[in-house]
Image 1 (cartoon, rainbow, N blue to C red):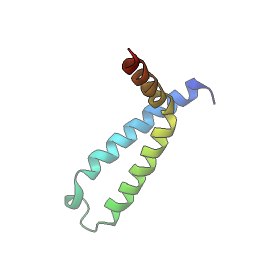
Image 2: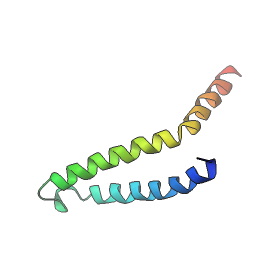
Image 3: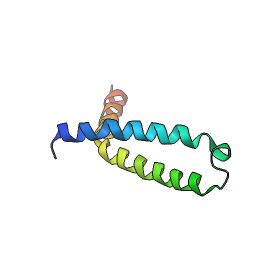
Image 4: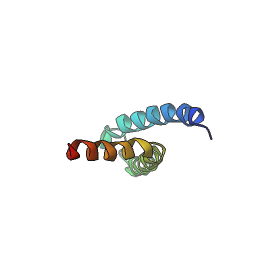
Length: 72
């Protein structure tokens, strides 16, 4: 996939992660049974893992910047 195609996938992923995070903040108030809270928590973890994979270049650039800053 080209970089442009990945970029069109990143924004909806970030929006979905934000919405799931806000919903999970309701905790026991929104989910008295608990199972929905656990399922959404696992889903958020999976979304987070996908997010980390898609943004691996950004993390690599942080490491390079850190080397440049410490070497000067």
